[in-house]
Length: 170
Figure 1 (tube, rainbow, N blue to C red):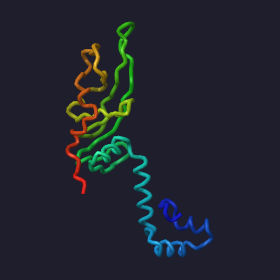
Figure 2: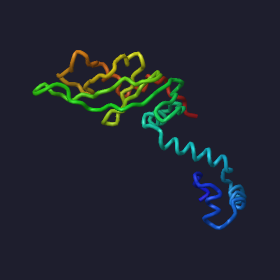
Figure 3: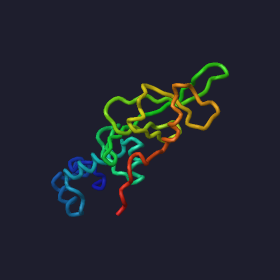
Figure 4: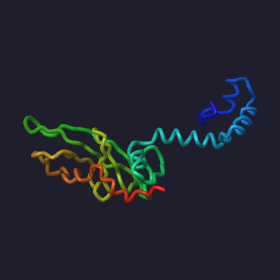
């Protein structure tokens, strides 16, 4: 039970019939973290589990991620946020096609990443997000979309280079 940092010494003591102080002494003898350290480790583990997938992927790719909240973080010093994209049908009759729809995020950010329904990410810098809502087709197609649709977004799918260079592994 001492290996699980989210269980307090008091809870362990209650379960096995010892005092909280005796559990603390045994934990120190066995080399486990002290009480407040256990709470900090537990808090970090909970945050990591709740971290949006974009930030998890950024960490796996070697970027330095500093969480700020549930949907935003600093990645290599740039304020990044994650949103979701969804499919929408555009047009009518024989001209009806399915496109990805994204909305402009509110608040401050340098880079926004939309999670696409297929699990990839559309990563755009703030200067390319001058729309309220837009649609685009992520696949090559003879149907280019409407005049209001931006067609260059396809180039920004999985464009991790916008975040800078990953830190070197030691």
